[in-house]
Amino acid sequence: MDLQTRKIEFVQEFLKLQSEELIAQFENLLKKETNKKLKPMSVIELNSRIDQSENDFKNGKFKSSSELLSKYK
Image (cartoon, rainbow, N blue to C red; front, side):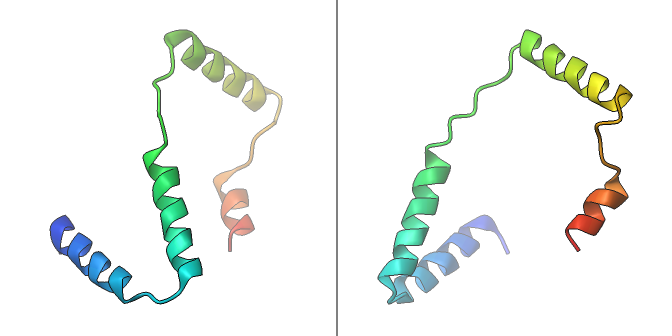
């Protein structure tokens, strides 16, 4: 299913909604997503994060993928 078809189907289902609370939740989600302003990291910030990650790893401050997966099962 292409994006245009999905959007049309979504709007059709949205128009059937009768709950003001649910519509408000959709409004809030839409506002939240459209207000996101992503700015790229500077090279300095990126390098700083890399350095911090490497230090965390050296000091044992990390979780394995299996630990993360078991947390969300």
